[in-house]
Image (tube, rainbow, N blue to C red; front, side, top):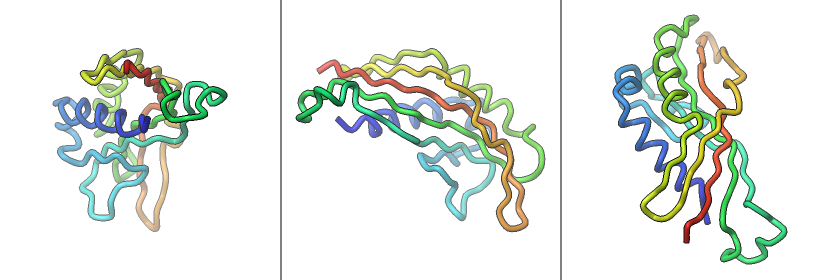
Length: 145
């Protein structure tokens, strides 16, 4: 099971289909930890920070894997010293993901639990300042097959 593919597909579909998010970022939604160099800001980024199989003691062969637990980040980033332009979209992603359970057509179930706010709210690269708002999620995939 490569659950990151399942979560990436689900997140992209949900986030790119939400008008309160695309109204802020347009098509600048990336399954990456950093924005592409030519990206138009603001951007929405989502990515996996860590994962583990459901019970590594019994996952001696791939067919024994019935689930995974991930730490996923969903964050908005904008250039400049204010986060006002990305606040509504950050609140929208939190509202649509936190505590939600998604039953997928392939039999997998994906659960999102908001674990905390993205811990870095500003950064600098060269002379550019960036503001960040987002959420760290604990994401669990349970295989239905």
